[in-house]
Length: 119
Image 1 (cartoon, helix red, strand yellow):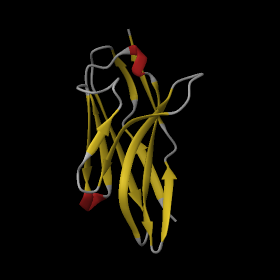
Image 2 (cartoon, helix red, strand yellow):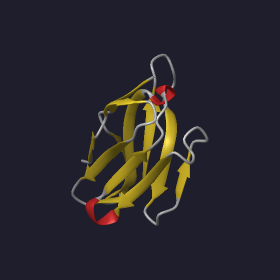
Image 3 (tube, helix red, strand yellow):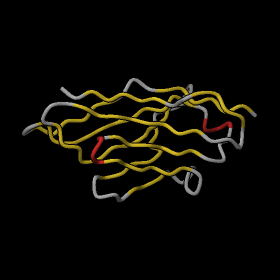
Image 4 (tube, helix red, strand yellow):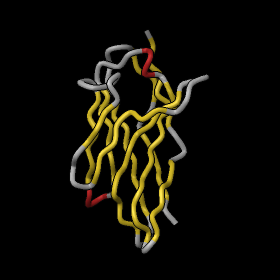
């Protein structure tokens, strides 16, 4: 079984910064890719940023130049550094971890962490 736990959300003023953390754990679990998604009220969940174990990352156009995703392979932890936050970044942010659990490909979601940006 794989567990994914996020932390670091909160309330921040527009223009401010936050760092989200996400740790994945599980006996025999080897991570392939981890990503951050967000869901605002009344909207669909969308990809914010993702990174593979080798360090290659991708970003949604709306966050390019403001957010940075990084991974600590030794800790199975991914971080999302969010700068120049805007009110439209307000959402619940979810972490997703995908990889090989022994011989099976699995994907697991975290419980989500709220990010609120005030204007």
